[in-house]
Image (cartoon, rainbow, N blue to C red):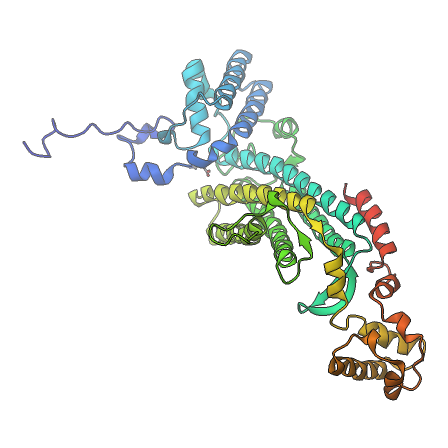
Length: 472
Ligand code: ARG
């Protein structure tokens, strides 16, 4: 007996039912493995069925399918949807992707008439439709999650409109700010994130269905009807573009990367604030973990992971950009690689936004620690310089110089500016009076910063109200 003995050979796998007409045998196992997308694109099943039902209804309306066939297909698709939802349908790798798994199951349920559904379309326009519909929903969900985080931030901002902490530049003590003002900075960032996502949603909402494989179709289809049925704004204008465009996924990943970067910056602040050095906020047991070796530990793992996970999102954007660059028109299988980065990004953002919201609702602010920190580092030095300008009419540059000398004196003596005696101050600038002490408090400093968009508690309270109107 030899391996070439026909009696010994394993029977060749059957060719693919959907496209195997000119194939004698099926693909190698590894071909099937690399080719299949069902492992992830099963997440598109509801959208695939919605797209198929709209397509089917349009084919009937246009007289391309009979009413009876259309009815059989639509009811069959509904049954497939139920089987997928309840987990009874087992997907098969040899059926490659969600589109062919659904179509094959439809054929098992309703017979050969299932084969009429694919009239006047291709998987190329089909997958573009599915993916857009899926992403549209995902964007809606992410928008809600961002809004929830904004609401939590605004509530804390309101509670801490007058809570003072050191404002930093270069991570160095700069000027006193209010914690509410600091939190509202993130509300603004998140507002822009929502704007970018809404913009992406608006631009993606064109219907590729009817572009078929790449060139359009000879059947008398009605693209406006499927557009209406699927809630798109208009049909795509160019079939080649429609089946090979993944700008919407890239735009989403771009907006998502910026959002993830914001969440990462916020996470870093939380890590700093809960650290032993700062102790500006406390996280409860619900949002901290212990150490298996150091019993005193309370670690902000959720914040650290939120900081780190931005890397995945940014990586997803890079990965897809690189996969798409250099692709000629129209569809290439490379495009199948579009889904995983988007799914991963949507999942990561949902997780991080929920964790961020949980932490903001959970954290207890420690106003005393914040205030104590604001009292060191000469944070009111700018106020002193402003006083020299506004009340003693010095040019700002000179005022800056004088203040520098006063700070140096305080530093040498190891005291705060407000602890310097007037006589010593007057040696540096004779025009100073005891009024100087009024400008040296951190409370006065924040209260004076009343310019629109400034940190004064009264401005923060207005900004809280305005933010509720704009965002919630
Ligand atoms: N699974 C494929 C994808 O996600 C569907 C489109 C396949 N088209 C094709 N011409 N092979 O891109």
